[in-house]
Amino acid sequence: MVEFGKPKDGKTDIPIINQGIAYDCTFREPLFYDSYPGSIVDVSMITHMVEKAVSYGYENIGFILDRGYFAKENLFFMDYHNYDFVIMAKGNVDFIRGLIEDAMGTFELEREFLIPKFHLQGTTVKKKIFEDDDRDQIRFIHVYYNELVAAIERRKLEEQITRWEKELTKCLEKKVLSCSLDSYRRFFKFKFNEQNQLESFSANNRAIEDEKFWYGYFCIITSSEMTAAEALKLYKGRDSSEKLFMIDKSFLGNHCYRVESQSSKDSKEWIGFVAEIVRNKIYTCLMNCKDNNQIKSNELTVPAILGELEKIEISRQLEGGYHLSYPLTKKQKIILSECFNISRENAMTRLLDLCKTINAIEKASKSS
Image (cartoon, rainbow, N blue to C red; front, side, top):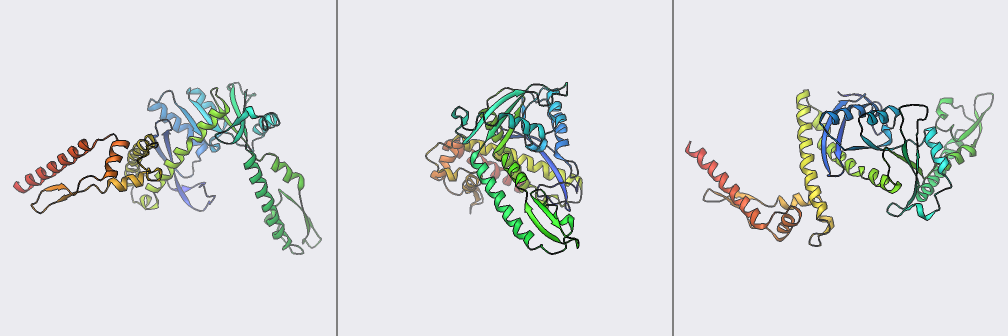
């Protein structure tokens, strides 16, 4: 499975392995996962993930997808299986830019289109996006504008142009390979003399202005009707699945994949997946008691809670039996009762039962 592909950091000289995880954003739990060779791109893998969801019998669900999965056939495939979707559209696609351009000037300053939670403007348009294809259906195109992001991106572009100008100035009156200037050609014009030396350069103001024109705008497409605010809230909800995937990658680092057999790799992936289910169950419990004033918000994290509960110990005493090392602390009682709905009496009963079980097993092993 380890093959040369397209890793997220842009490097192409490193063999990789890909993994996809389906995650329930409503109940915050992993559903299933799949590994596939590194040379297979995500945009072509989504159809197989949908088929797997169908084979598992999942119903009344939808997919929240990043722009990397945006492709005509992927949308039609989900239509065929009656799965709803929320997907970020690629801004550099001509017809998407056309949709954004049609909406420009109609909502950016109108307060009725303000989405206060995310501090941006949003509007919704109903239409087909692939009108030349009979398979297409009416989509709901949500166009957004964030003036703060637009200002930041425009400033970054101007700073980048200034850096490029300094770099190009050093190349004046020198022979420069044409291919070495490819990264600059989008925003600069060049003039060479007869000796093939860079004689002068100038900024392509029209190209720079065209680039700035689109800053701050983005587009989300949904298969079912909803407001721009609802669509953005759903899409932002994928952040939880992104965090889950980051946790999964920490479980399954290079040290886990450096194994000799496929079965070892599969076993480690399975253990990591089960660990994610347990971890996210704990996370959900913590989120449900976040408003509790008895626990500080910065302590309501999975590592912090596990660190506190790990202090509950059962140890072997001098007479040979196992007992609880010390009573539950105040913080442990609050965590168990408020986060996990386990009373102190219930916790003590379980711990004492565990001590009796261990003692009985040890006694039976000695007698045999």
